[in-house]
Length: 157
Image (tube, rainbow, N blue to C red; front, side, top):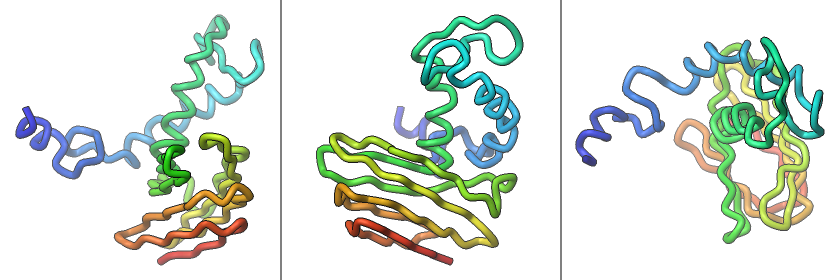
């Protein structure tokens, strides 16, 4: 079984060979934009089930289709609340190059963070408000930067 999974996912990104997360993200960006337009339309903090084409049945798990790709895959946010740590390993699609991506009040256990990042020309800039003192690990192109400061500003080539 492991051999088969390794052949299907040789680079370990969770996707079959030949499909990188950035390429998939680029194809689905319009769908995510359309889904976001219905955010909180029927129920605060939710998107419409049939969004955006017809109907509007609000269901709590529907937000999963927007939050998981953006937070976990594009920002690469991996919370480890039991260790009071988060890992960031961004995979920003080319269509978002040069734009700030912001995640406000990201909850990790009893802590919260405000995260902003921008990819431009092979570099990544990250600004984090970390009043709770979580350990933040940023991974970018084989480099790792770790900090637990209350305000973190990092730029990596």
